[in-house]
Image (tube, rainbow, N blue to C red):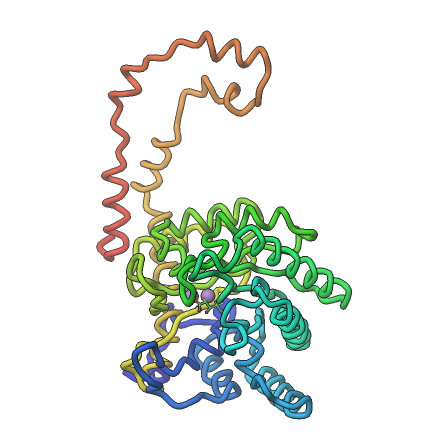
Length: 396
Ligand code: GCO
Ligand code: MN
Ligand code: MN
């Protein structure tokens, strides 16, 4: 069935779902290291129109997704003016903007971490201009994905120096954004590898630790991506939970991935359904109200219609899983099991939550536990997990 003819139902995306897509996602032309483009270019104005018709709320962009690398200032202004007109015509926002610091051959050894000071200086110049563009388009979040900030030949770059260079760049750009009066929050996006064989700050945990070493840690958070943590063999739900707990989930890149391989950018929820179920449960319970941003693209087998099928599929699957989460949470047997798992006679709560004191240490040292009973108790997690599966498979 063609995407635009899809019958409307309770899973049909709506603006209030805050779904957004990168211009580069629907604009992906299917080129890979082994084969050429399979689809023609999409005009950003056309993508805005199509995405809006499908129920999306926003579009994000790299500077060069909209303004070509070598555009003159006059061309830039005309393109930006037409794009803003399209945003207003189709009721779309730009929640996030970013810089392309990986495509041009000048960035072959990275941008902010390049060994060449001229490249590092150019990267700052390009990013300041792209920040200006993002602010002009109303973006609230500015993403930093370290595309080529890594190394292939380990001897070529001291990794400690690379970390310091990245810190210097982010400190400079935070100060720039504050100085301009932009109300931007920076979201750092970790990825373990690709296009470099190793990228610095490979996971959410690495990035989180780094943020607290910056000059303006309050304005810097994370943009975790499903595929990137899965490439590192990690549990994405737990990574996002840590970002949320730290108040650092500023943005999220939703897609899917078949295990620890190259970055596949598959349609959201097309592979790891159970893990995406728990991701949505986490996001919905946490009150996260930022963009639900898809960073994925249609398969190389597709024509333009396949691109819109892909985009609609990402959004519908989110809403379908969200409905499953609501049914799961409302299931009396699930509630009863969760209550049993979290119940106790209350004896130790005051000691566990009261913090350290000499008295609490003394009481804990003297406490007598029925260790055998603790060891023998069955926890009922098999039943709970099976209920999860029954909900996901739609039989409850
Ligand atoms: C990738 C990344 C990128 C970034 C984008 C925005 O693996 O290619 O996920 O798509 O998200 O450049 O920073
Ligand atoms: Mn990616
Ligand atoms: Mn991404």
